[in-house]
Figure 1 (cartoon, helix red, strand yellow):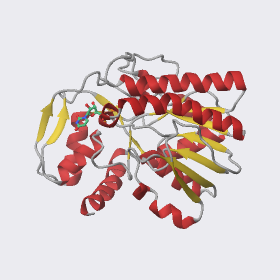
Figure 2 (tube, protein in one colour):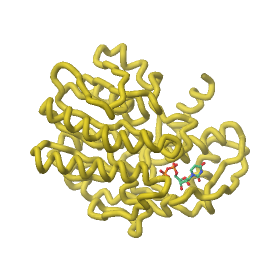
Figure 3 (cartoon, protein in one colour):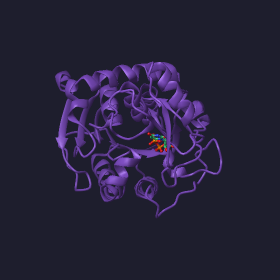
Length: 311
Ligand code: UDP
């Protein structure tokens, strides 16, 4: 296949690009480098199977030649990033999805949308199955991401129903691993860089909120399986192992051998209290489930961040 990945230089886009190339495909990455980085994909150029186009996909998209799949992964994805770039986040989720769908239709390609567990908002059921409609504050600071992705899902299903296009919607839960920016503000990079520098580890709220963290290699494998399936409706991909943020902070402090103190800071507005994917659908239809446990995944990520801090 020749696949186009929008956001191909970001955390997930770059890991996906690598996976596709390793599996014999070629990749065209489109990225405006707002939160993505060329350093994430530097090594891929040597394969001869990777092309990069610096472009903002909220505008008309054109790539010459055959395209078999369009994966729309462009978007700021960390809360501090999308709160810093609220309008680009809304635009890439809304206008960018529309342009990427139109482009996929033109190329007769399969379209995949990177959606998110944020479509469930601050959920009042736990775990969250795909059938749950969510509890999102449309006008809160996180609404710029959540509502853009909800619109993106609606637009994707409209193209599927109206234009009969093959589409895939992956609802991605918290993911971590190499190629995350150490300063992206999310819990894993924050706790790791704070631990490595023996600075205070900042737990927001009382740390009783939960998340379920998936190692990026597991996620990418699930996304690939979903793309090759025939499921046109949303599928959760994530690791159902749920822990509190305080436990995560303690785990990271321990594996880094850090002398950091754990301190408590105010909980961000609308921060979900719980989050855990129901992955029955992925298990049943994709025969997928995560394989990397939290400890192993954190150790790999630690290796990556140690190198990053030396550069
Ligand atoms: N969090 C924290 N300390 C930090 C960064 C994040 O306690 O330094 C908390 C945050 O409030 C949330 C959880 O960690 O409850 C996960 O946050 P993240 O930004 O990683 O992703 P989210 O799941 O909120 O999108």
